Picture 1 (tube, rainbow, N blue to C red):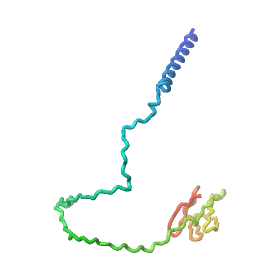
Picture 2: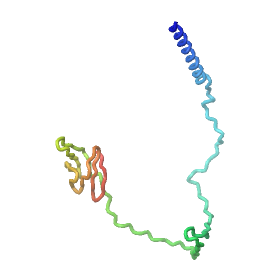
Picture 3: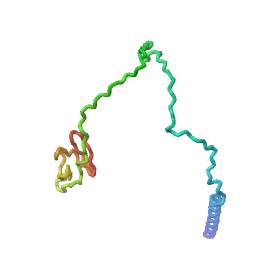
Picture 4: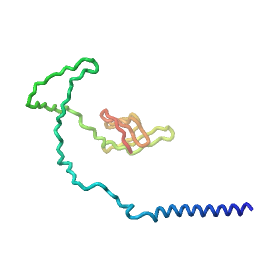
Length: 166
């Protein structure tokens, strides 16, 4: 007798779920109109001033620097500058002799080989078109291999260090 009662309850619950989903789908699809999709803007179209025609206003604020020194507790001394209408033009210092930038494109990392017996890693590196197998600490055409990694190497060239990816 229990089986019949469970079947009746199951059928009633299925009908209730169908009714609930029917109401949800009706509210979604039947109640929407085209007015719901139009954007209503209360902003009137006023022509805006282009950005390149914007002229900043002249600053008319003057600072009052007559407050006391917060560290010493004494009133600040105001130095009066002699007003000179001529502008002082400071010379631009000459550029210092900087070393030329390093061209890292001369170094290419082709890959690595691991010796299964000794577990020693050797990287295949191309410098100025010449290929060489290098271990950590080896130097070739001024390029020193500092560290072998899985996907990159750390090299030193002219005192600078950089990671080179494969």
